[in-house]
Image (cartoon, rainbow over all chains, first blue to last red; front, side, top):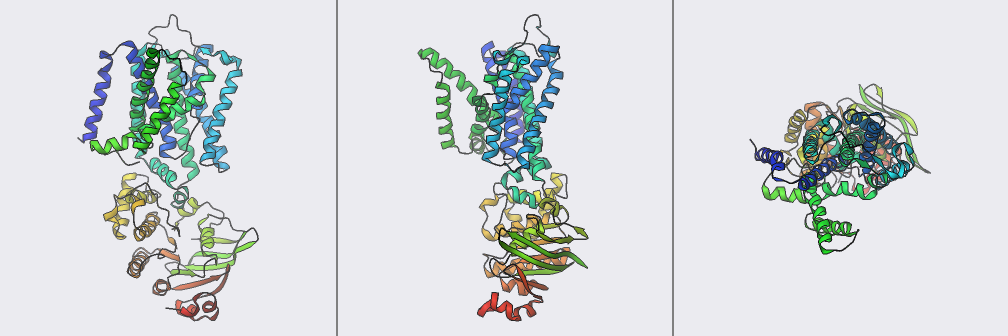
Amino acid sequence: MRREHLLLGLLAAALLALPLALDRYQTSVLVLVFLSAYVGQAWNVMMGFAGLLSLGHALYVGLGAYVSAALFVHFGVSPLIGLLAAVAVCVGVAMAIGALSFQFRIEGVYFALLTIAFAEVARIGFDHLKWTGGAGGLFLPVAGSDGQWWNLRGGPLFFYYVALAMAAAAFALCAALRRSKLGYQWLAVREDAEAARAVGIDVTRARMSAVVVSAAMSALGGVVHVFYYNNVFSAQIFDMTRSIDIMLAPIIGGIGTLFGPILGAFILVPLGEGLIFATQALGVNAPGAKAVFFGLALMIIIFLAPNGIWPSLRKRLGIGEAKP
Amino acid sequence: MSLLKVDGVTKRFRGLVAVDTVSLDVEKGAIFAVIGPNGAGKTTLFNLIAGVYACDGGAIHFDGARIDGLAPDAVCAFGLARTFQIVRPFPGLTVHENVAIGALLRQADPQAAFAAAEEVLRKLDLWDRRAQVASSLTLPDRKRLEVARALATKPKLLLLDEVMAGLRPTETDRMVEILRMINRDEGVTIVLIEHVMRAVMALADQVHVLNHGASIAEGSPREVTRHPQVIASYLGAEALG
């Protein structure tokens, strides 16, 4: 067995047993870590693999959350079925955005701007949509549903394993994609689209498939997000800061790598939580402190490891992940 | 039998006529050179054939099918692969990955593509460099990588845009050997744009000369280099030097 497989197995065993040693709060922090790793992995499919910068990835998470929550609240549809609708909506929107941009050759920075625009449209749109509670937000009924796992009702421990399974599945999926024909086509398109065309790759199709895969994965992230928090507000879920949060973990961990989003999430989420504690303990009320601190952390990490932490860590550990 | 037939093709950029009713007829199995001074429209002609630009007039047939108007990836799938004058490897990927991506056009399975790439890399003396990232290669290696990646798509015809440019004479001779081998052993028809006359004379069966977007001569290397208009516009006093 190769060294990385052994390490991966040890990591999995540790994470499965870990809740035994954690209190409720610590467990809930790890739920956020896994969800962040999961959505970061989805974002990484577009940016890290296919070279498409999405600055509005909160769009898909938010749509997934709203679609599944609205179906549950209004029709009592289980999120296990609602997620199919959520994925379908997100894939539809992703294909519309993809068709629009690739048709008109909107690339690079302009594509990134377009993704922001769509997230903003969703934010404002859901603010005014009465059916989903408008600006007041949408709340899931909590009472009397304990233990209904098929309705994704449960406490931090339940969501710990749900989110862990999702993060693990996303990792496995991305690892498989990375080694597939499509994965190599994505890398080629990312590296040089014109050269990719010259070796027979349908660049538009490759890009479209990356957008679709990423959007579908993100939709599921949104579903679990809303059933974990039991509420969703358009002003928060579609916000630009949310999109930035999604990107930070893979950027800090290492864009285009499989472990980057996971490592980044393990660093950033506890850091953010610790910061909340620190500011509370110091008695300062500075709502922007987290952003400033993250900004500084990002600058330091980019200065020390411009390709992210994972690539340099990997070299030190002597583990060979397939090169991005 | 003609494999590639370019029929009165024209391309205009605003006011400038970059390619003016040019016709070529490339026989199957031939090595065909396109020469001419800078700005003569050689690369534009390649881009028309490869599908990068749409023609403003004329038609292009390849292996019995009309290919003008097709996208570059569709043209490549037809069996017509090209290299870029300014090399465009996938810079962050390894040499092996670069070539395997070319092989993926005919191989759905990545493992088989890597195996096919190995064969091509050995042929082009790049096997020792397989684990290197393409951006770290020297120019001669990059030029060969460009050919290797195109060759991995299993083309019937290779369009080579100045693969000798920037090479030293010994490296040029090596490239000439490689191209000859590809042509002879694999039956790949080659159309090349070249300024290095030494390579053109060594390789080409047929030479086509462009000047200001128009054809001024075609024939064997010997005939063309004696053509007065070719000497006046391109070869000049240093002809055949």
